[in-house]
Image 1 (cartoon, helix red, strand yellow):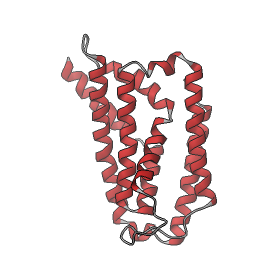
Image 2 (cartoon, helix red, strand yellow):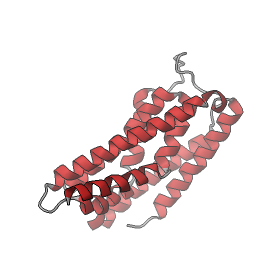
Image 3 (spheres, helix red, strand yellow):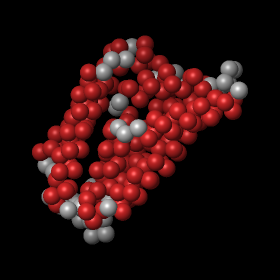
Image 4 (cartoon, one colour):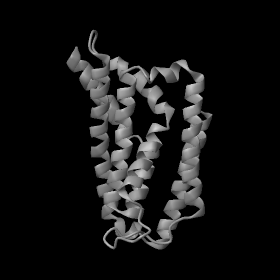
Amino acid sequence: MTATLLFSFLFAITILTLTPGFDTALVLRTTAAQGWRRATATAFGVTLGCLVWGVAVGFGLGALLLASEIAYNLLKWMGAAYLLCLGIRLLLNPRAQAQNEAAGETGQQSYLSCFSRGLLGNMLNPKVGVFYVTFLPQFIPAGASVPLWCSLMALTHMAIGLVWNAALIGGSHFFAAHLRRPAVLKVMDRLTGMVFIGFAAKLALSRR
């Protein structure tokens, strides 16, 4: 029974990880604009957000989003505002040239900034918490420790996410020379900005 639940969870979480979303757009854009090292920091931030949500759900904090409409809406609007700011910034101020990792340019964002962007983008999305609180319990064996299993499943999700992001970064790095052309970079920034604004609107209009 436990093995069946485990394989079912791995199949479902892998499909969900491969589904494009905000995290995919953010990692791809960071790879093209700032290189694979900072994209890796962003990917760690995104996946760590999944782990934090999983642990929170395991200890019952995620249930608060289901029980309290005020808590859900507060986090929802904070997340939508954050995504909207990111999107508007990319639309109004697209990069004219890629930042060179090896050159160490002063305009280059720090690894901590890239990591924080990925982490906040995930943590400020209450739908992740609601998803975890409704999804993870389906795969917990009867009588098992809920905090332990939720944490382990979230850690598994994080590991799968890191592998998938590594594939995305590697693929983008292969085409880096083309993606870093000024004209292409501007188009990518503006398209990514529109995607972020779309995610912000989707989040703001979402219901539990």
